[in-house]
Each structure stands twice: as structure tokens, then as C-alpha cells.
Image (cartoon, rainbow over all chains, first blue to last red; front, side):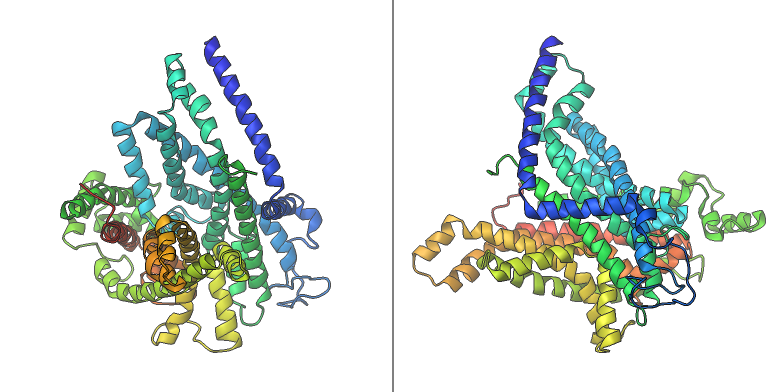
Length: 294
Length: 306
């Protein structure tokens, strides 16, 4: 047991210094910093929405129906006289929350299954991976819509549907990494020292794929944002009075010809947010890749 | 090769079986059975019982499953609860419209993705390369339905160059096909660029240059051919993903294909059609992947299957 602990603490010290190197590399990447900046801005928008938004998101001004951007209403107003900017700021809450929660749920389902499939091999592996194949066989958005149609619209069901749809990619990734790692000596050493399977998975396998997972989860935060927007756009996502970017697009769409600002600016907000996660994720990938030199 | 194709086809069987199981359980094992889903919370007990009986929902679950799968095998995919039309017949009737859209959108994807991918690789780090890469990145970040709305705003509303929605002439296809095809073009472009860069650095390309071939022959005859192998896989995968994209794009442009039909019937909670749709899409996805895998073998002679 003593030996095992010693070996593990040695391993974690190494990985800590790797993280420091990676962080230093990341800070030097301009694109990644732009990405980080965007993500931080969205987080601040979401947390401080009541202080940042000029109006409450549902406050109507009947003298300002479908008005273009102007002083007082920087991004214009929608079809019932609500401030588009305020709604956009409040809408970031849903996007952020869905991105985090769905990714969390996908990780919670996908990673353990991948570890088990890769480590156990044989029949267990076959069953888990065929299950993953089956879920991947459905076009994600169609399966999500079907789940929504059956369980009914609403934010919780959106997150449920998107988690059900997205976990297999994590399982595939983790299984692949496990297959490679479990043949390496230090895992064998851990096994020889009598570490139970759960300990090998958590202390030996996971830490060694953590950089891949960080990159993958960062990049993966963006897809639920677009998916939530799609579901809400189709009228299946969050229901009023909750504001989400997808709902704004779906409402704005009816007035696209006469009042395009709602649709245009909301879409830009989604695109920029997704861009932020992608730039940050790409930057992290380069920073965490030990094969790349500074 | 033939044995590989057969083996690969056999691998689909458990997946398709799993698909039928998921579709069935999704509809039957969830709180509220299909009759309840269709009639909604306001239905009376009598109405529900009546529909249950006529849909055969009073039988044990496994009996229902096997009779459903049995029906699927002989082409009886059930009837719509709304208009009593044959599910498979309706889907097959609408499928050519969607197929047409898919084909044109693939032309957009390949026609834009590959040339730009090659140019940006050949002129690496030039202005063209930087603009191309930035464009691809933004293309990947945009929600495609929003991009479609922006195209609609610009080309159909503001400049009335193209019809807003519907189907009929080639002009009706342009906007939905670009909407569906452009994000894929970004993926194909990135893949094509990195694959070209890989190949250009290889020994045989240097040899081709060293023996005095002009640059065009080196790029288009020697490099491009080999660089295309991973690109073709990506194109195949794109086609699979795009099936899901048709749901939103056909809805935005009111294009009468299976995607829009799926959406309409989902809203109406027409359970037999929902099940048929899910099956059809998943089946097509498996088929596309099979074709891609087999094509891979023909294109890349290094791959051996025995």
C-alpha cells in the first residue's frame, strides 16, 4: 500500500508541473485568450444579468414595437416591445447552464462506461460499445426532438434529451484511451501492488487522459448551446417567460422581413459564444500536447 | 472484399436491432403510453381506452414489440394516427425530395470545401489561407438554421433573388442546399487542408518534384489523389450527420421532405409516424456508413480486409 501511494504521489507531482507548463503555453496563445475572454464575458453576463441588462427581460414598451437599434434600446425591440439587448443578456443564462449541465451529464454517463468497456474488454466491452453505436445511429437532433415530443417541452427535458444523445462520443474517446493506457507498465505495476479496479480507473487511468478530456469537454460545451437553440427555435425548448437565445430566434423569425435585428444579433451572440469555446478548446489542445515544443 | 462487405453488413444487424428496441422503448416504456402521448393530458379515460384497444396497446409489451418488428420486416410500418395513411408509403413518397436536397447540398459541400482546402494548403500561411481558415472556423460556429435565416433575409427578402420557401424549381433548392451544405464545407475544407499538408511533406511528392515535374502536376496528380482518402471519409460522415440537419433546414424553408414531415408529426405526437421516422433515419445512417466503409476499401488499396 505504501509503495502504491508513493508511486501515485510521484505521478501526480509530475502531472501538476505539466499543468503549469500547459497554463504558461496557453497564456501566450492569442486566439486561446480571445476564446477565454469570450467565455468569461458570457459567464459574467449570465451571473450579473439583473445588473447589466438595461430593462427586465419581459418588460414591454408598447410605444416601441419592432423598433430598430437606437439610443435607449441598443439592439432594438421585439414584436411586443421588449428590449433585445436585455433579453440577450438574460438568455445567456440558459445557454451557459445548458452547456454546463449537458456536458456534465454526458461526462457522468460517458466516462465511466468508457472506462469499464476499455478495461473489462470482452463481452462487457461489446455490449457497451454496441449500445453506443446504436445511440450514435440516430441523427442527434431528431432523437432529441423525439424525446422532447414524448416527454414534453421544457428546460429539464432539453437537458435530458441532449445528454441521452451525446454521451457515446465520450464513451468512445475514453475507451480508446483506456485500451492504450492499460497496457502500459505503471498500470500493470498498480495491479501488481494490489490496487482494486476502481482505484486503477480513478487514480491511474483517468489522470493520464485528463488533458484529452479537458480539451474535449471545452469543445463539447459549444454543441449543447447550438442544440438548445435549435430545440427552442423549433418551439420544443424552454417555455415563456424564460428567455433563451433559441426562443428569441424563433420569435424573431416571424418578423425577419421587417425587424431583422432580433434574429441577427441573437444569432451573432450564439456564434460568438460557440467561437469562444472553440478557440479556447483549440488553444488548450495545443497547450496540453506534450509533443509540441514551446 | 466480398466477404468483408458481408461481414460489415452483419455488423449492422445488432445496431439496427438496438435501434428498434430504443425506438420502441422510447415510445412504450415512458410514463404515458402512445395513446396518452397522442391524446394529451385532457383526454377522457374512455377515449384513451378506445384508442389503446385499436392500437393494440392492451396486449403485453413483448407481444407488441414482436408484432411491430414483424410488421416492419414485411413493410407494414403502421398507420398514422392522424390521417390513417400508411407510414412507410408516406415516407417513401417524400424521400425523393429530401434526397434531392441532400445531393445538391453535398455538391455545395464538396464544390466549396475541396477547392478551398487545396488552395489554402498549397498557399500555406498566405492571406488566402488565413481568410479561408477564419471563414471555416466561423462557418462551424454558426447555428445552421440561423445562417439559413440570414441567407433568406439577404437573398430572398432584401434582394428577392430567390424564393423564400417551398419546392418546385431549382431556385427553391438553392437556399436550403447552401444552408445545409456550407457548415459541412467548412469541415471538409479543414480536413482537405490538413491532409494536403501531410501529403505535400511526403517523400514521394519530393521525388515527383525532384524529377522535374511542374508544380501543377505534382499537386493535382500526385498529392491530391492521396490526400483525398481521409476527405472522402469525412464527406461520408457529413452525409450521415446531414440527415438530422434536414429536420431544421426543411422546416425553416418549408421544404416538403421527410425532415419537415418528421417535425410536423412530432408536434402532432403521431406516434407511429415518429417511430417510422426514427427508424428510417437511423437505418439510412447505418447504410451511409456501410457505403463509406466499403468505398474506403476500393479507394485505398493499402487496406486489407482478410
